[in-house]
Image 1 (spheres, rainbow, N blue to C red):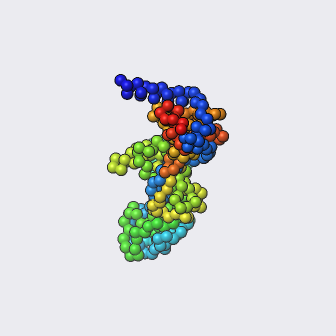
Image 2: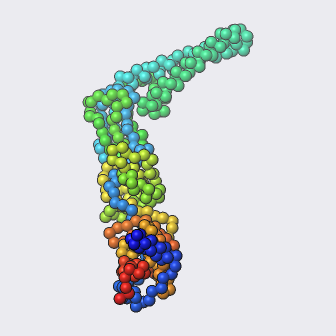
Amino acid sequence: MKHLLLIALYLSSLSVLAEELIPISAQQLENLGVKLGKLTVVHSTPLMVVPAKVVVPIMNDHIVSTLYAGLLDSIKVNIGDKVKKGQVLATLNSPALLELQRQHLTSINEFELSEADFLRDKKLYKEKVISDRRWLKTRTSHQIVKSHVSETRQLLKISGFSQQKVQALENSHHLTAQLEIKSPISGVVLASKVKVGGRADALSPLFRVADTQTLWLELEIPQQHIQKINIGDTVRFSGMEQSARIFLIGKNVHDVSQTVLVQAVIEPASASELVKLGQILSVEVVSEHGQLMFQVLNTALTELDGQPALFLRKGTGFMLQPVTVLGRDGLTASIAGDFSQESVVAVKGVIALKANLLGLGGDE
């Protein structure tokens, strides 16, 4: 029963400290060894240090392949080379390409014959010489042949033929087995799976080309800490001046590692030259809140009903002011609460101060 009364007295005393100003003299503070200090305004809060991998944005990463199988005749680039959009990466000889050109020329010839029939029957139909059925049949056949010409022309362009090469083929009827494999973007050749004289199968990956001017970081954040992370938070590189900005927080937890994928874009884009694709870095996630934040020594923190609090100096007394701890390291903590930049708090001797105000110790 006595213990219950002491506990009740202790809890009620905490409530008083939180609601009322408790006077204490400067001599008492000196006797208790209490030191006072101002809160330091901070604009960001270190949250955690985690490993991060440098990756290229998926929309800037391209696999280069060919629609038609063939034998590689030449390779124009090496891994690490910078290339321009449309630059030839390799050439191959493809019998399938010859067949496509033959089909296109055949469709051109059929179109010319169909065009002549179409114009003739159109004139006859206007003169009411032929029936509706014959005109419909001629017009439909002409549309089918015309669509076939468009189809084979588009297939040639997809395979790597330019508009000029398609036009030259239609004019000269000169077939070529050589197919040029071109880069779809300006970037860097990251991988090559080809050798001169080797066979390239249809749709098999031949080159990997990526635009590395913009790079991302991929962080694996433990799921128990993911609530601390917000869109817009900063990621700082250990030992480097560069940073990144978080733009995506995953919605699912990895079933094995129990981590959440977080992605950040490296800022500025020029900083991407200082890190390498695939590099593993140690980074610090820093939260940048819109609210006013302060930094205090860990020794200044105490508890109020299980919540962190500070002894706030007001005039000749103290109030136990609750705070929100945003981040903490070995010596200091970043907090938010009902404080101003001029607020003064107890930073040393907090345990003795708390015991004295609760009547658990003397003022010496």
